[in-house]
Every structure is written in C-alpha cells, then in structure tokens.
Image 1 (cartoon, one colour):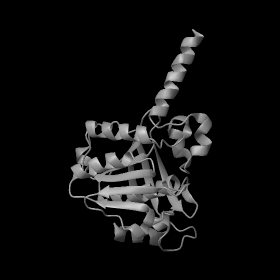
Image 2: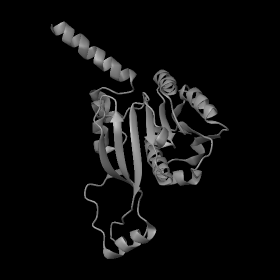
Image 3: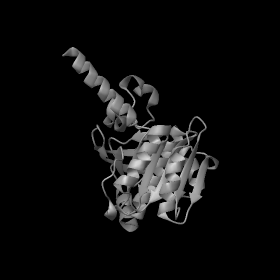
Length: 245
C-alpha cells in the first residue's frame, strides 16, 4: 500500500513539473516577488514553463496588463536574457519599460500582419531556449492553438504570455493560469496630489492545481508590493476621480 502511495505522489510531482511548476523545495529560489499571489500556485512558486493568459475587457485593462507583465519580465529577464513581444497593432511604448526595470533594447518587438502570423511566430519563439519569455497580443485563442503553445514551452522552459484583446470571444484553453488585471487609482504615500506608482486589481481567475484569488498590487522601486490597507481618500481625491471618471 505504501509503495502505491509513493508511486501516486511521484506521478503527481512529475505532472506538476511537466506543467511548469517547481517542487516546494525549490520554491524559495524561484519566487519572483509576487508575494501572497505565488502561494496560490502549487509549491508556492510562479510557473515559468507555462502559458499565462490575460483577459482584457477595456483598453485600460490592456494597458494595466502590459504594466503587470513588464513587472514580471523584470524578474524573468534579470539574468540578461531577452524577450520577444509579438503583435499586429502594438500599443506598448518601449521607453515605458524602463519604469519596470526592463531594458527596452532587450525586448525584440515583432509587428506582424495577421493573428495567424502572430500565433505561428509565438510558437516558434517559445522553442528558443535563449529567450526568457514571449508575449503575444491576440484577439482570440483556440484550445488547439493553446495546446501547441503549451507543448512548445514544455520543451524549452520559456514562459509564454498571451494578451487576449477580445474578452467576448474567450474560449476554453489549456493555459496554466488566466489573469485579469484592472487599473486602480494611484496614491502617494504623503497624501499629496500627484501621480503615484502604478496600482492594479489583480484577479487570478483560474490556475491549474492552485487556488484562484484577488489582490491589490502596486509597482514601486522595490518591485511588486501588496496593498493590504488602501489609503482613505480625501475630499480632493474623490473630486479628482469624479472628474477623471
């Protein structure tokens, strides 16, 4: 009976490794600074050899997702590796990556004609072991297409990020995690008016073998910071947000 239990445990561990998850013993060395969010993943570690899907409802969500992914890239690329960013209508301004400790010159931007070209190029790029990650902006992603991308990352160990710009066409995929990032008003520490660090509502809608959840994160000079007690807004802040909204 004991041998069967050990066999099942070994099989479960192997499956998690194939899906991009690290065993608990390696978690501390592999954590990328997401704090409590990483505890939602098996072993308490962000899965790198996997496809992460980001759902966007509005242009503001797409911009927030760009910033959040840039924060992730700052950790994934810290050893000097490059990243590919593929799209048909790129929104991202390369210079803005510096705010997230990412050197723009280490991002290989590919602006292509069709979504079919984007998906084909992403699959090929994901097979390049020299890349830290590949980001692709698409309107839709089918189950078959997501399976091909997952097979590619399992071979190379590269992390894949899919930005889906048309949430109304969301279909089932085999992505390891599905995220939804929304922008929140930034707040200065001293309560004075002005533009603070980027702040997001981070929703982990699904995660394979993990626990979905919702968090508020802020990007600062030290990286990602959890916002546990959002600052109470003053009268001028409320008036300002009403004017902006």
